[in-house]
Length: 247
Image (tube, rainbow, N blue to C red; front, side):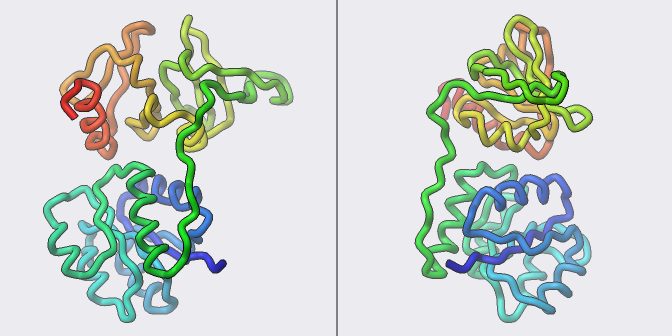
């Protein structure tokens, strides 16, 4: 079955990075290119059409609305933005969906499924939760990187990426280094128990002891304070509200 060709336009490189990761997790999508410049994106879209465009709203030269207005024929459009006040204007453009950064994979998949349905393609079920309570990882510090280590999810406090190595901080102040990226680990971890809250950190939600003004979290057992990245703050605040029983 033909894949859905898509492109991403956003002047925020971090947003492009996680959207690219989401797209690669969906077999029906084929990412053709990404652009941080709406001017260059307009030229590329006029030269060759794509089926689906993921586009930000606030960008220099051409904002997302102006870019979509300038396209003919127009692809299916999903807007991904930090602003929640332009939804009406977006749907007046007949966009498929309007996503608020930093969007979860489930919400992203829901939007993509709308495009799949509109194009007459049966949606393939995507499993995002893992029933296991552990995973096996290669120890990057072992010679030859051939030894697998069992890691119980309940032992993980947080994961930090440094110098292309993911450091998994475990109970008892133990640490495991792995060559797996944060995105690969995020996909393997149960999403109801772990949260990406910075481009360099994933934390275990049940290890949070306090939150400082929505800007950092404290993991008291190992005495660490983890910053909350600006682009991850919205998702964290919603999760934190649910953890307090206010969701």
